[in-house]
Image 1 (tube, helix red, strand yellow):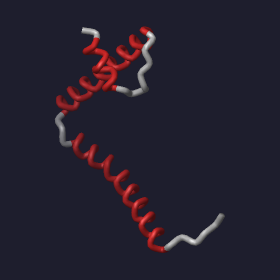
Image 2 (image 1 turned 180 degrees about the horizontal axis):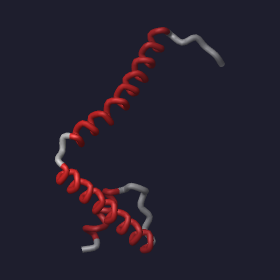
Image 3 (image 1 turned 30 degrees about the horizontal axis):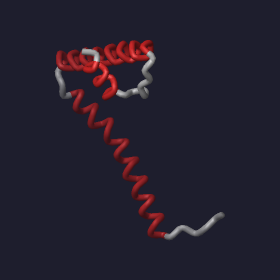
Image 4 (image 1 turned 45 degrees about the vertical axis):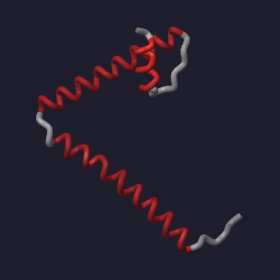
Amino acid sequence: MLTFVNSADAMRRFGAILGIVVAVMLVPSVFVSAWAGVSVWQQTALVAIGSAFGIYGNRDRESTARAGTKLPIGSRIGLVANAFAAD
């Protein structure tokens, strides 16, 4: 059913959509400018730390899958809890 949209509601929704679009456009620029301000050795260290977390997360997720326990995809909290429960 087609109805008329109240102008106040239309402006509020348009403003919300515009705000989301602006935020989505600004977030990458903030990350790029922060990344450009970091020295090369710090960038290398951040990449190494991120890679180590990615490798550890995949290894731990595969071992829990083999053990028969199901974790939601991307559940870092569950992975950390399982790591401490194994001790």
